[in-house]
Image (tube, rainbow, N blue to C red):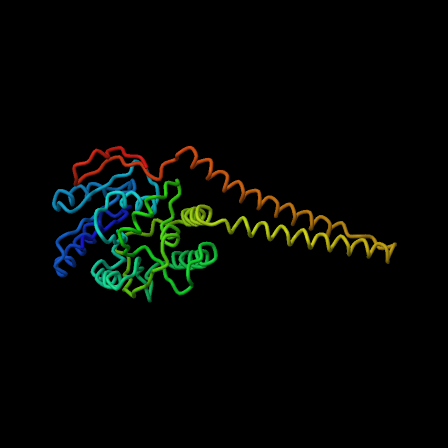
Length: 316
């Protein structure tokens, strides 16, 4: 069984070499010689790709990919998937928080017959902001994508090759790996692993990037937001109709009653806000369709090192 490791890299010039050494040491301990490590530099502003280039020169099993601009973690994973040749693909982070020396736990579950195995952390060493973002992501994937409540998803996972091949059939401009996995298989499990403190720097995820990531997942793999908007609009319309009946009855029974101007304005503001919200949601879907029709790339590769390739400047 050949193993392929795919690691998105961003601002990791001081950590990626440590992560790669931990992988190679663990594989040596497991007596696995047939492997490859694919490092995808997502246009990091530091010297990350210089370190990757050095690692490729030192180890023939390492492939380095350099993006032309920053496309995000999920696009970087998709770029790496296009170069994998292994039977099982393992994805992990570049900051050392995901323990590469516990990869055998994920592979044991793969050998038991599971298609995808996600690492589950009992005690996460993220900041409060990242933990909050993870919780929101958990709830949203359950509601929007139908993820089982008992399933924990993380950036550290192993998948069989046919899962990755099916994920590569997605050509949209907004890849969302969790959505691609969930639409491919339900034969998924968790395995507990440790979660470490970050070696260097801070997480690259900001509130803007998190919101963009969630929007990618839910507008690309679910129409539930549109259904919620439709159901919400129907409920508001019914309430408005009932209120109109109430106003007519009140006016007939109490002719001298003066209806309030403030309540009327409040209803107009509520309905106006709801209409704008639904129009914005529809516009988001239409905009993404427009971008996809124009063949906006998931990523653009500036350079590949570590293998003889003609994919220099490759656009997907």
